[in-house]
Length: 627
Ligand SMILES: O=C(O)c1ccc(O)c(O)c1
Ligand SMILES: [Mg+2]
Image (cartoon, rainbow, N blue to C red; front, side, top):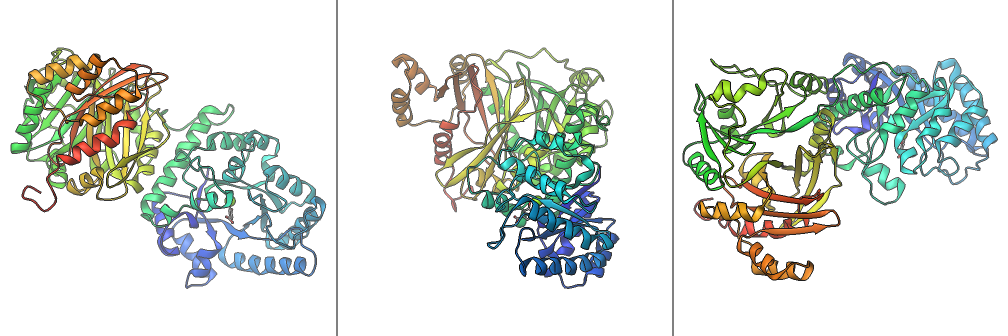
């Protein structure tokens, strides 16, 4: 499969766009006419610049308002096409996209349009140019790929085919399986884009909100499966009109695009029978969180240790050769790394106290890294000391790392090997059993990147995005989880620096884990045990409990227990959710304790605004000593 991307998808000048596209590993580009016209350099120079990057110009586009016109508009349109074909000859490009007309004088008529395309095919033939007809979702007479194909079929010209664009098909909720009846050799070109499910005008949605396959809510994989079933073997190209991407980092957007295409084609090869076998290991199956590692120093490391102790964790040993300490409870391993060399040190210097490493239990650690590498992730390796295992790892959010452990390769013995403590001998403590979820905070414009990263590498599904109201702005939250819920992750995107998440980003110098939630089977017993050990929960105001009494049918004694332990409550048709929080530590990190009842699958979004307000009350005012 040849990968391609439209220049319109990337920010910057044409020169910058091409450099970013080439660096991301694409094979080719669609030259968007606007990008060419704005460039100061002729078509031969542009053609050379593209080829110097090792790229092919797969398509020139768009050619608008061509079909169904009365004369003299019709002959003018054919003349306009000749000009473009001359230009394409100089560029070195042999495919052009003609998008369906929105011209006020266009007359429609399927045979009239077919005759126009036959005539255009005759003009294109001596140039060796292929013309592809695309149905814009808002086209005047043609706005459905089935009609575009009928025009092409009746045009019956070897230089005329159909262009399929997933956005136009899926946005109009057309059944992508109708593509299966088009012969693959009549498909000139295939464009892919996803988009978030928002009800709005089609043209506006298309020009501002498209995103990479897997970043939105459309069934781009179903669309591409249908295309693959036709036998189409030409380039597959991203065409993403997105306001955020236009202003974003060109290299990151291009890398995300490449990753999304590889991921999509891998999923298609797995799901559509009869295609060549996938080249990379399958999406990794995550079994749970094996450890959370903090980089910390001095007083902050001591304070973290005290906090863990009040939460029921036991000090479970020191690393054989390093200043690294293990805390345990239930199946939870928290590692506090105080080393002044190596990766944790680098992380600490950049971020201060924070989660530098998350260890995941996976089905196959080596295969997980192989898939991540194939999807353009950065493999992480650090020199191992005496008595240490080389555990497969990759770079993750904000320069942190993610390690992978499995049963089969002996990596499960890491605790015994490095700490002299076999797994499974942890105390029950305050009743915390496992990590429920890990919450990462990032700038809003990084959220799609990281949700694609996790979605592509791991076997996960994402929940609809939720808006969380901070007193000083909006925070968006996207949850990602494995099918069995053994691993849950939330990504929180801050739009302003005045939100709690925004402060955290500023104070910890970039994206990283802001909180870790631990699960308990009995939150009131856990809260009581922690209180006995000296734990101070995040205090919630009485107003919150008065409102709970109004919203839910809770017995007064129950409500009083929740209030006493500062436990927040939510319920829906599937079950109930109880949660309480620690007070913030270091640069705004915190812990959460949760109990899920029934099949409750959320994160207490209804409580988030009140939790954030409570946390903000504990923050020292800006400009005061201590900040
Ligand atoms: O928004 C547009 O006009 C437009 C132009 C060309 C395309 O290929 C497309 O999908 C949309
Ligand atoms: Mg298109």
